[in-house]
Image 1: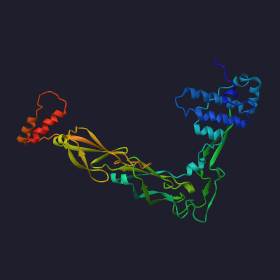
Image 2 (image 1 turned 120 degrees about the horizontal axis):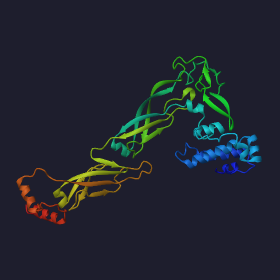
Image 3 (image 1 turned 90 degrees about the horizontal axis):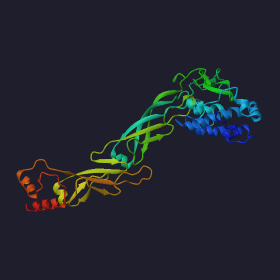
Length: 372
């Protein structure tokens, strides 16, 4: 049988630790090792279970006295080990530490309006320069007649008799931790803590009505498909004065007919014929800022790329631009007349065997063309 560790050692406190010190110690272990935060981690689950048992004993004054006098034999023989692994992580803190885990109260959470999503399509050029767009969003807005209270003006509200104005129903039960208090939303008032004397004639007591609102959205340069812009407080209105939700504008960038984007870089496929590739040429190509002329050197190979520094997309945060890459695609002619075919035969190369393209081939091609 495994020997149990000392409960004070488990929590990492001294034997004279105050109730508050015990609570803080258990809170820290629960934050680090609760199964909700460490799925499939047997070590963390065992540590949480051990700490739960230790805190259950040491937080109860009577059981702690017995443990201090007689050790594990005084508290472990009569009952099962304590394991709160199945209790949700958030409920651990609501139940034993009175909330305060950096979250809103239950009433605030339940009264907050929903977040909304708006899909917006922009052009490739607009994603490069940035743009301001006006959108119209249909949403639940606070009723103007009752200012979102849900009550007919002049009638007001009264305290909910079901919860006494708290918006919650509290129930107490005994556990190894002592008295455990659970809280649920009041079914009478829906968590508002108040009931209406006379519902508003416009919104019928809901405090919200369907309205469309026009908004200006500033889209920064460099956004891409899937980028999101959050507009705080422009979601649906909260219930009876609750905080509004947020609006998330999700962007889709139309593809460019000639340019492709890869993160901050732009790629353009340049189609050239074998003469241009062999002898070189000056060719006008498109960029996001307009056409530019580039030099294709003699002997350019299929798939070879050229870099135009600083011709790509700007980074949304830093503004630093990527590059544009020109990738050469060699186009082989399909419909040759007899004279053209004869010229190519002079170059040679019809050996019936695979052959690497060498500068010798282009030299022969250049000579054949020059004889014309």
